Image (tube, rainbow, N blue to C red; front, side, top):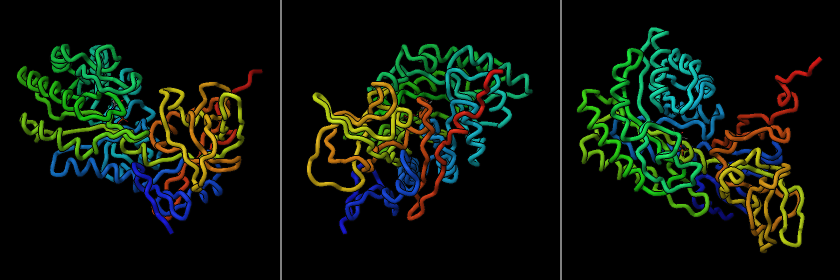
Length: 425
Ligand SMILES: *Cc1c(COP(=O)(O)O)cnc(C)c1O
């Protein structure tokens, strides 16, 4: 029996010509549960988390999983049990943390458009910190907290104006982005926060983008943030924690981001050199914890040869895997039974009635109708961004743990799709 790891996709491998997630053959899962089907490896998630934990060993640090990457309850449960906090961006995400048994006192709340109702709910839950993104939000949060007889713990999200060198839709730390308070206005915003009766300044944060594959933007952002911490504290406002956000990339198509422990070794050297190494540190990783821990299994429905293009039509679509349509993103696509021979070059597309509904372009695949394919790197920003467009129910999800395969979400049925709708008359 030959066993070969899929490089860059830990805990997925081929054995005896079949693709496995840990001890589970993917073809068995596809047969038992149908397709499209998301399959996640718990060991892969914990290994990704382990790299951060190794990087922070001996430090006063908190890892807050940015759950918008994958907010399925059993995935949250994995990270909650491993001791993580959570970075949330809505009241709905707070409900999910509670439902998954997460510690609400380790929740931080990011986002440019928090409503009063969301603020009230998060204050009642006793979250660790609001990452405030504008002067206007500060005023509203202070008055909401006062109304409840509380003081809201706040950090200001500072926009350090560094280029994360990633796709424009997932770059967030440049001037002209909607996120955060401009670096040059941040001190003034902190002074205002310190005066407001409903607030208690606890930290500072930044988040410069996503799918970042170099250390330099992080090092630059850290310098800018530490300069500010110095100025804010010189103005008499103590900063308890420093939060450097998330954004570390993963290997989609030969990308080579630094491993989390290497990146943090570099960042911690700078922090120590500047005298901030003993502070409470926070980070908000999302994609790098789950992205390569998941695949989406899909059946080839039809092969449609054409004069200019051959199409491989699969049963997963842009509603399940939105990243190619949204960002022209790349996912590896592979048959889960090893094939020999080169086959043809296909555009791999879904059944949705949009030309934007493609999953991969110009892929050499030796396939026939009925084969099962795996779309790799499908653990982050796939299920959590999925929709019901074309009245397609959401896929089922499996969490593999060694030889056990747990159904963690049932396939959505027609009654669930129409629940909440009302006919007139
Ligand atoms: C999306 C987001 C993250 C996580 O980003 P990844 O690229 O998935 O690591 C962290 N913090 C904030 C504020 C975010 O919006």
